Length: 331
Image (cartoon, rainbow, N blue to C red; front, side, top):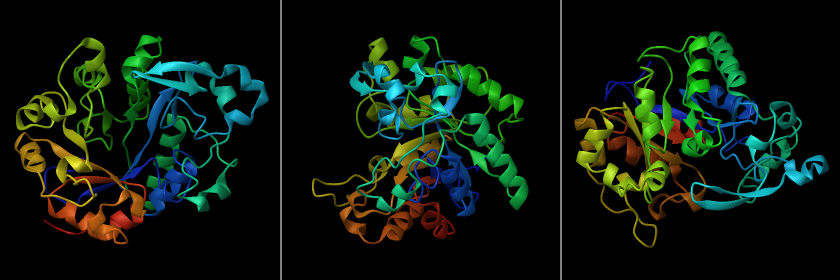
């Protein structure tokens, strides 16, 4: 199912599900994304105390669940250093799956997506297995292969506390029949070393995520001086191609913005990545004006058309229906 370079329309990756319409990383968000035409759904994976992979954007869950209202868990609030940043709250690795299943999801950005508040308190935190069950069931129901695009979140941190994500991820994918370079799976990470290690243990497609600032956390821990900007160069992309099949890049790495939020000229990243044999998937597309460049406020469709014209192979979107409507644009 893996789309090869420029042989088809760009794939639509539902970013945390149809998170513009439902609280992110819930079965309801994933199910709606499939109904809206997404090719892949994207679960960010963190671990429970008992080693079960679940979908949350962060292991700190006060922004996306009602954990703060559970008096029985008040004593679990704590402060930790995650990827070099101090965070205070409640963390998935301090809860068993049974405990986490007593929580309910809530909208992360209610000030922007007030319509999603209606679902607060109704939806559970899903496990990776529950997400796979949904995808397989829906794929059979609609006779269309839906892929999954899991991200290993904070892999160096989770490895440091004895809850490495990679082995349970591969085990779960294998037992569910996801094997081979053409399986409908992409495994993504903002870190490098875990992808390099995964490349020796699986032939499933791997995606190196590239932010528009900073450096991979494993580089920070090991003292590696390279940054994401270094990885995004032509030579850096050739190095990535030794262990990954795609890059997932921040939009600004393809089309930078000036200090006023207006778009500047595109960079050579798409051309350079394709020359290295890498697919290019771009994040994150959202309909709200506060996320759009000045050029396309009120016109999110125009932003998709620009990026599709650059030859990208896929887009991460909170609104897969908006993305999919324009995914037939050919370059």
